[in-house]
Length: 43
Length: 307
Image 1 (tube, one colour):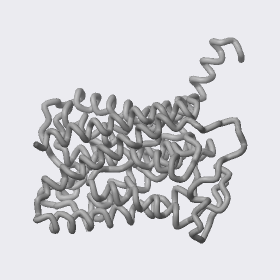
Image 2 (cartoon, helix red, strand yellow; image 1 turned 60 degrees about the vertical axis):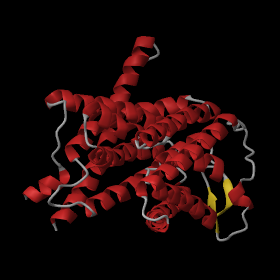
Image 3 (cartoon, helix red, strand yellow; image 1 turned 90 degrees about the vertical axis):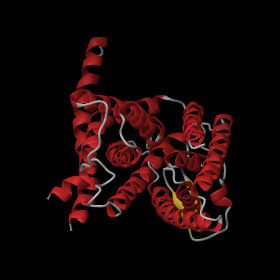
């Protein structure tokens, strides 16, 4: 039981981390691109 | 409950402690994440020896934790590649299935060959590592020379798997290939998995050349598809390590280490994917041959240290 729980933890936590980071990184990419475009004077 | 924590966070001693240890891990995770994003590899072949040499993490815990980290980075990468339509899902599915079955068969074949050769495991490992170095050198040479891919052309040459008259067939919509043998795809995954199982080395570095040279995918499509195959094989590897873990001596996967690596690793993957999209397909293959050479060098160091 404990072993099964540990296997689920070891697979699910990095998997959820990977999924969760997608919108977070999308947001930061959007902000960074906006700053770059502003500094280039294209927006 | 203490057994549970011993399984997900095995104890060990390192010469670095506290924040310095975790910041170093995050830095390593970031650099390997960039590699994963650019080339669609897990990066375990570089990460494990670096964690062992520079941070003093025991080899088995480093290997287990690196595999757990690869689940996170490949998940982020796969989602991004999927949005960019850079994954051939059917190919990834058949190759992953073949690869997992090949890895299990490789493990069994390895035990049989060791028993057949009189139980000399060290000699067997040395021979296998020698063979693996040769395979990697051939792949590096072929990848650096094969520069025929033309991104602008709509005409794709008929690949080996399309010529293979071994039904049933499937279509690969992203690469525009029609009538690709499913058994061929499965077989290619099986051979890759068999090699990695037989040699006891994680084979992420083999997937991308298999997809480019064997399946005939465009380099950018191969990067995304390779990452999907790596995701499936890393999940199965962590499950295998978790199931075979001992509650008394502790597991081989450390969640705190994996999460420290992941803290910056996912950022690295995103940067890597952006770099990958800016590179021409032929350049991507040339740079990848350098990564294959680095993998060959790491195996050579391991082989030499065993004498």
